[in-house]
Amino acid sequence: MGKNKRAKEESAVVDSKVEPSRKLFGTDGVRGVANVHPMTPETALQMGRAIAFVAQKGKTRQARVVIGKDTRLSGYMFETALAAGICAMGGRVMITGPIPTPAVAQLTQSMRADAGVVISASHNPYQDNGIKIFGPDGFKLPDNEEAEIERLLSSHELDEARVTGSHIGKAVKIDDAAGRYVVFCKTTFPNRLSLDGLRIVVDAAHGAAYRVAPAVFTELGGDVSALGVKPNGKNINRDAGALHPEHVKHEVLKKQAHIGIALDGDADRVIMVDEKGEVVDGDAVMALCALRMLRQNKLPKNTIVATVMSNLGLERAMDAAGARVLRTAVGDRYVVEAMRSGGYTFGGEQSGHLLFLDHATTGDGIVAALQVLAIMLETGKSLSELARSAMTRVPQVLENATFAKRLPLEQMPRTQKAIAKVEADLGKAGRVLVRWSGTEAKLRVMVEGENEAQILAQAKDIVAAATNDIAAI
Image (cartoon, rainbow, N blue to C red; front, side, top):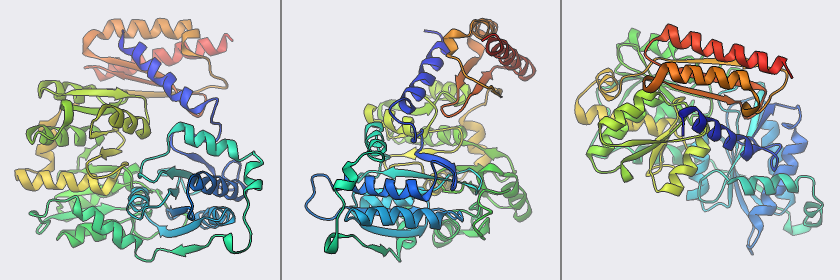
């Protein structure tokens, strides 16, 4: 089976998980412009009712639901609406306030809650917001349970299950939620090690980790310079964090720091900067962490899980070390599903979602950074040395094209012909991935190869062919 054929099939998996059974839920919960359907308080209230209804099934006690959020202005609106819906069904709400997405997953599990809800649009601008749900095990809900919640939104079952009087639920604030998460993060760092003497720049993107991230690294002994820690409800992700690592780079060079850590708005992903100011993305982090786990015999089946977007250099590095890369469709939920079904414990995405299932149930930027810091201390090597020796990146280009409509790739003959030509030209020295976005009529074209100018031209050729195919409809 050719590389692009595999990629197209994996892309189809993304689509099949979103449509038709789920219209609101995408690959990472419900997301959209705040106060515009579907991200309205009315939908959030109804979703709170549905979450409580599902969580209550088979239980004789109140369903318990943790609600956390990032720092967006609209978070107050959705937090209140979700809590009201849960209470209306007799559930008990535990509100954490602003806290990272992985913190909600961890607290849901440690507090024996029946569900956890995160109000966040991750790396999106503040005008957007989203709702994602964790089960009692701290993992994101599987597709069928999200589909059930979505079905209930328009069902009369919720009205029939409405409670009154003393059965109405209540909401309480978990005052020490941030402190609990800080302690959890520190437990993932080896007790024998300390960050004493390390200069660390941390950018929290004015988001959910604005308090906890600096606290974790400071309490472990680091000399921390904190950026992006002044949220005002409207500046989350704006010229800060993982989307703009250049600010961390500037501060690293200015402070002569050992490492820069750039988180996104909900802190479930991280991009790092080495002491020379070079960006170290998720692929490089996966390579260096996997090599360490291999040496320690802690990498089950000598396998890491990554998406079709991860650089070919990661695959080559793992192959040279006697390990392999199992690829999935784009989306950290699919990485987690493959890890759990295959018995693997480490994986992630090029974008910085890194999953250490021995420590956490979802991507965690702070935990990932701690693992890299541990490797630096254990080896006595700088991040630049570790990243350089872990893998050699193959040039990769990405071209996105938005169309008025979308057509299945197998019904686009010009595009298929262009893809086949590029694959033939590249041979084993490169890779092609063409896929539709899971949420919009946007075609994503990725080409890898040894000659950057050549692969850029090849990607543009594929886009031009797709444009002709769509125009011919």
